[in-house]
Image: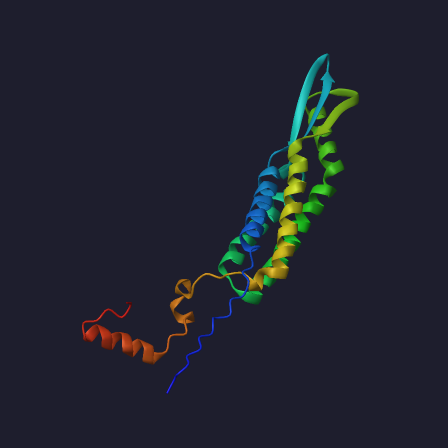
Length: 198
């Protein structure tokens, strides 16, 4: 009598390789927007009785919403890393909204930040009609960072439920689905002198 044993190989799903790059891109964009949102966005110079005076305006002074929303986006990435499934998607949607809001705040602050810089120069005694105002690289970097974070969150909305999750050992004790029988088996193994974890 011949016994034929057929072994079937386990079905291996293709791994979603977007997890690492998307999270790194999103964290980088949100961090850049948060940092750039607190830096000098505009400079202005003018003449005060023959003396050249300069003034700068920070993004956090003209558009404080940018840094605040960028920090919300950063926090959302932290939550995306910890949660699983559909909840990740919901948090990713919140991240998209925060990032798009930060980008809109940067764009909306374009004229206002230059006016604030002009007012700052006039506050230092500059007179006359001609003031040189310019936006710094930090202004553009804040917008770029918010755009990158928004793009990464859009990818997360689409793919987050398929991404790997943290193990259940990090769950709160009450959230675990341990059966009472499994607990009894562990205690029995300890009573018999065996290691239940091996």
